[in-house]
Amino acid sequence: MATATPIQSQFSARRRSPVSGPRLETRFDRRLARILVHATNVFCDKGYAAASMRDLSRASGVSLSGLYYYFESKEELLYLIQKHTFSTIVDRLRSRLDEAADPAERIRLLILNHLEYFLANQKAMKVLSHEDDVLKNGFGAEIAAIKRKYYRICLELLDHYKLSRGLEFSSRTAVLSLFGMMNWIYTWYNPRVDARVTELAQEMANIFLQGIGAVPYEGPQKKRPPISD
Amino acid sequence: MATATPIQSQFSARRRSPVSGPRLETRFDRRLARILVHATNVFCDKGYAAASMRDLSRASGVSLSGLYYYFESKEELLYLIQKHTFSTIVDRLRSRLDEAADPAERIRLLILNHLEYFLANQKAMKVLSHEDDVLKNGFGAEIAAIKRKYYRICLELLDHYKLSRGLEFSSRTAVLSLFGMMNWIYTWYNPRVDARVTELAQEMANIFLQGIGAVPYEGPQKKRPPISD
DNA sequence: CCATAGTTCGAACGTTCGTTCAAATAGTAG
DNA sequence: CTACTATTTGAACGAACGTTCGAACTATGG
Image 1 (spheres, rainbow over the protein chains, first blue to last red):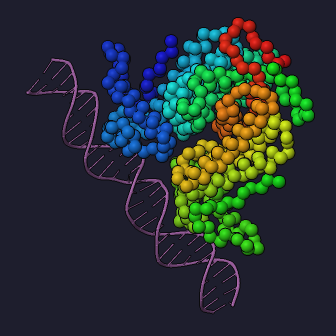
Image 2: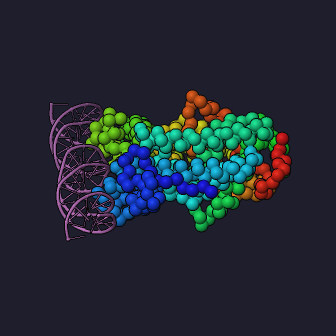
Image 3: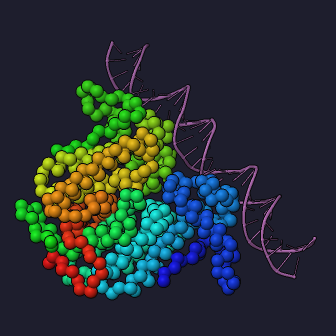
């Protein structure tokens, strides 16, 4: 069972970290998490750069200066959001991949996991996708490392699929196209008109899996090439 | 032959608009275009919100106050960039679609047109994609109108393809997935390691066309479903 | 030459930004 | 209660923000 990774920073000196305390989640952690939720909403609506600390103060009900008791800068706040969101989705994928051995099925699991988490945490995932390269130096390096790890996993899934079917295509282009399909939904998904997660995941998986498994295109031609079906 | 749409705003009163003058491109228009190029670079690197008018002044070599001779606000500047970029890509698609009648070929043309323009004007397209909903009111409405027009064209291309092949799938999901694949490249494309435009367009077109043309997925199963090839 | 319109700029406006800090309050253990 | 720590705050800091404005410059036609 996958569980959300705890919100913790290795940069700011965390106050009240319970190393061996009875309560695993301190009051500090709970209040911080609450602030992070409000901050995610604000960052999602206005964008990181355009969102002011005063906006965050208003949204969270904590005074402007009070916010700085929980993190050291606006930048660290974005880092905490992105780190938590990204780590959770990777952890969930990891434990989910144990369920299936078939290469195609594992790719379907990847897509389902990504979209399920994406739509269940739409605002956080928009902040993760949209504010992709605003963090610099230490913060940025750590997020980039998680991103590389996630990318690596997906690339290996694709390579196994390719091998198992004897296919030939650029794994890099395919993986990044798939990410594009999935991540772009934050710009258009509307729960009122669009399909539910499982259905959407199946549609995208169909497009992608059939797409990479088919014969390559050989140039313009008068007669249509035979398509399966 | 498709040509770039002229840079012109219906909001600010344009100075020196050549209604019937001998020169079609005034000194004013040329200077404005030069500023727009520099502004595009800055918006691309720092993001619209984080880019300051002083950054634009430094990059373009025009004094801070001098910029306001060419446009009335930072917001109008973004509008001019997006309007010009988006109008051009739509115009080019329109004239290009005359070249082919086959539904599949027309979709390939859409993809090729989009990616060619995207990679040839990578910075402007990033500004268009990334700063998608920052413009409000009049400016925002006008960009949204172009966007709807572009979306409509693509949707019709897909519907024709569906009809010609008797396929069944959600055109909306398919179109938006395709846009995701294509637009996401601004986050990863690297000319040193990635394929050239025509090759990339062919790979994406293969994935997409074969993807939407294949039999639907029927759920997990032990035996692999038959794939064309 | 002058007159006029087009163009550029330095200086400044008022506002908002992220962050700091000393002081005040709330919570808890003895 | 007292003593201590954890938490919260109002007020203020200097810096940077988008924008304005009048003066100065340039180009052009008469």
